[in-house]
Length: 255
Image 1 (cartoon, helix red, strand yellow):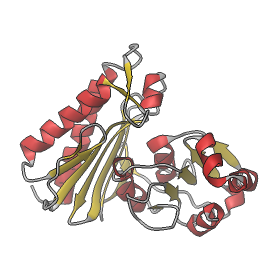
Image 2: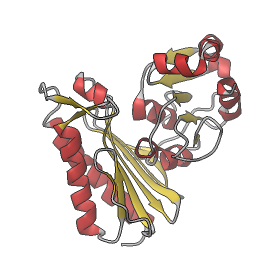
Image 3: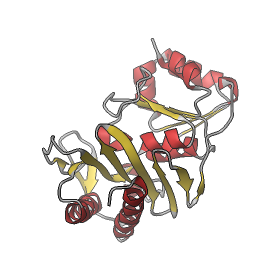
Image 4: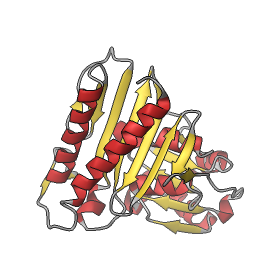
């Protein structure tokens, strides 16, 4: 297997398999533990990541893996590296809210080339690979054509974090945009990729949160960058846009 479409089909099937596993714990009163960074984790997060890692190791024993729950396997010389977030939006999952995702991204020779975001409780899947476009439940996905920030719908994850990071700039963004909604985590970014929102803002992001979203947004015609405007998964924050609004949004978040 060497073609991107083969990797993409593998990742879609794997995300759906892991998603079915998470649904076995969803709305079940699953026990919640706290990690060292004070973020929540459940057996569903850990079991789903172990499943994904096992399938990748069986199919691609030479590939490296980085995951939220079990870290980096240390294979820095590998040309192919998978990024795994078994449950993006664990807080939504814990509260029985269906806006959580299984995220799987593949980096090939330093380029984010394949991305899948599967929302098990919604039955939605976004899948993209470089040059192959982005599909939403099998149909082409495209960003919006909104050209003015004053007409934009902005999705975000945590209003308190945004206010702590941006202060009055967050208030200005709220006043200067048409609609703001807390459709957070990967779901907000995927709303941008499907034209249902125009901007998604996150002040705190890890590589496994971002890796799948880069090809999804880019292949849908949008942008996924850090707040400095760099296309990276290591910037510590992220903004998705429909492309047209990118410059306006970046100017709004910069000091």
